Image (cartoon, rainbow, N blue to C red; front, side, top):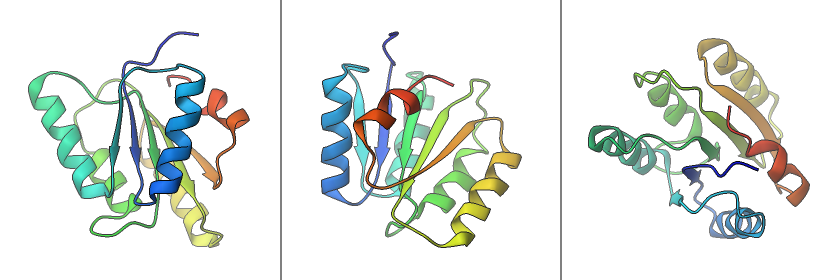
Length: 134
C-alpha cells in the first residue's frame, strides 16, 4: 500500500481521535497525522500549510458537531481553497439526523473532492477503505 503524505483528524472528541490514530498507526498508512479540535483550527492550519508550500492532507477525517466551527462550516471554507488535487474527506459522526445525510449529499455535488460518510465508531475494517487517496 502506498503511504499517504499527510492525514488530518478534525474532531473535538479525544477518544475518537485516539482510536483513529491508533488504527492508522497499526496499518502504517502515514507518518504524518495532524489533529485539530475544531474546524477553525483545521482550516487555519491547512491554509498555513498551503502558504508554506507543504500542501494539504490527502485524507481528512471530519467530525460534524464541534465547537467554534463545525464540520459543515469547515467544508464550506475548504471547498473554496484553490486545490486541483482531489482530497478524500471522511465525515465521521455519531449523528443520526437525516439532515446531516442531506448536507453530505449536497456537499458531494458542490465539490470535486471525494466525500464519504461513516457513523462512529469507525472500525479497523473501515480504515483501509477510507484511507485510499482520492
